[in-house]
Length: 278
Ligand SMILES: C[S@@+](CC[C@H](N)C(=O)[O-])C[C@H]1O[C@@H](n2cnc3c(N)ncnc32)[C@H](O)[C@@H]1O
Image (cartoon, rainbow, N blue to C red; front, side):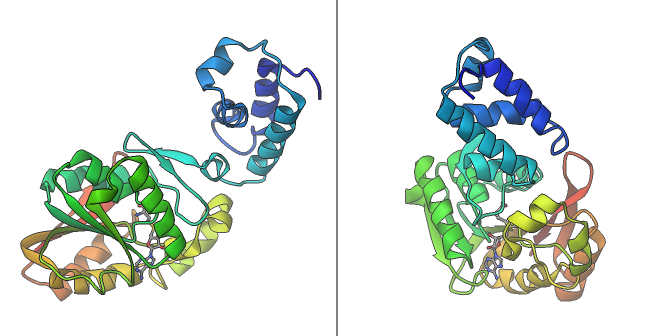
């Protein structure tokens, strides 16, 4: 429609997204900013500004997709993680705030050489390289398309020279010794699949989520293999599902009785990261 103002478009967008999200107004602002190329602050400062019909058409098309459950970051192509603006596409899992707990723990180790297994968008690898300017990172993933996104994020944050991305199964081609292995692996159990929000189940890559019958397939394999490349005293940090703390501790005790292990909570107080030290 000709002559729609910014303010009117935002009211329309918030209304359209009411049933989709807890933050309809914010998401409408984000989509209008993405459509027009204007910062959100400018939109808010000039609500009377007229939008051209092409922009209105594109904005409404995005609202339709978002209202149908398509994830916002896939529409805008961006997400913020650990204070960094990252590129995301439907080839990668959308980085989650819970994973920032894993980054905090990894930074505290101050590793010189670290492997990020299942790097996806590269969010963990890039955050570590940005915050540890002396550190070198290997980022592995089975998905070639995910690795292209990770490489773009490393370039965007000027850390490509210290991150080496490798397409492989877990850590198969790597040799040690490394100081730290980190991973946010697929850990959704078969029985949890039906309970996942529609937007995740339908739109995020299954290979990034599917942890096999009990959700622990990849975690189990990584627990077995990581010590091969870790230096003595090296550590493994694995993000886990909130209900997997006890099961993963039991796995460690069965596989590596003399290793030290602990479960760390996320900001919401849920079990989130398994740490094992050999
Ligand atoms: C939960 S996502 C995590 C992505 C990213 N690290 C993050 O925290 O947002 C898991 C990633 O592991 C990758 N993956 C799955 N199976 C793998 C395997 N056997 N070897 C290496 N990577 C694998 C997926 O492609 C996906 O990118």
